[in-house]
Length: 378
Ligand SMILES: [Zn+2]
Ligand SMILES: [Zn+2]
Image 1 (cartoon, rainbow, N blue to C red):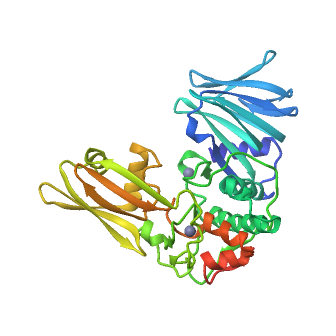
Image 2: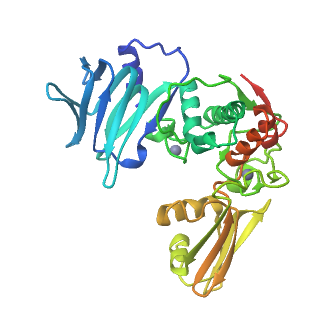
Image 3: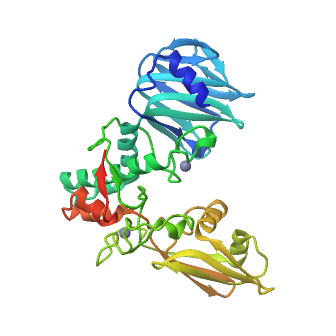
């Protein structure tokens, strides 16, 4: 796929040594087979070794027998791999079973026919992606009533630096699928382009030990290091551990406390186990690292929190076990998970950072708090 991109880049005359770019798999959640695309300007399209100019306006995109059809009332183009090269924003409208929604993007968009769906890969400059994904990630936090304009900029700057650090270190996440990051919280939430530039372009976190730009919504009051969630991860001094402030910085988050009941049968399905008898948490910094459980044969087994979270999310939705900061109590044929926070509690706590920004802290102070002993460099 990268080879094809290279050919396309040469065809369209884009320099490979221009501004660094990032490849994002967009709308990955929707298994698209058809949608509409609204072009705001005439746009070049490349397909089957040919190219043509599309007029602005509405175009329909459909997958049929492994081929992508791109058409309006006057023109029909088809191919298994199509590239749209646009300098202006375009809007994609998706009609899924229960809703219609539109998202606006800029950049070069590739369409691939893959596994009976249309895979969309957007290529855009890293700094545009850093800025846009920061807005998608922070969302409602930027509209907090008590936030000043300065506070908002400090919060944005800190999230941008963390995201940029993450991009630098995690680019191989979706290598097999042919792009760098998906647009979901699995990587970085990206709901489209807003054409803003980042506040301090190019700055990333560095330190004596390893440091990566991990972040999460709400720590629920307790922060930890990456080795808790990913057991093979090196222990590093550059992640704040323990309390997120004297009185938790993120206490106003709607995810601060949560409570979930799972039936024994649901838990057995997650653990791929029959006759579950008991389950206990193993913790570090009060956050769950793994779960130890026994069945009726008294065989004790262990599952890592990363594996447990992924399986629970896939089987029962991502809203059931929101974080790895919880306790478990058995109640009859059910298990009660009483927890705090949303996410893994590593690095920047977004709701906590918002509170620090509201209280006048600069992005440097916010970053020093969540990533102690780190420095910024280009
Ligand atoms: Zn991803
Ligand atoms: Zn927090």
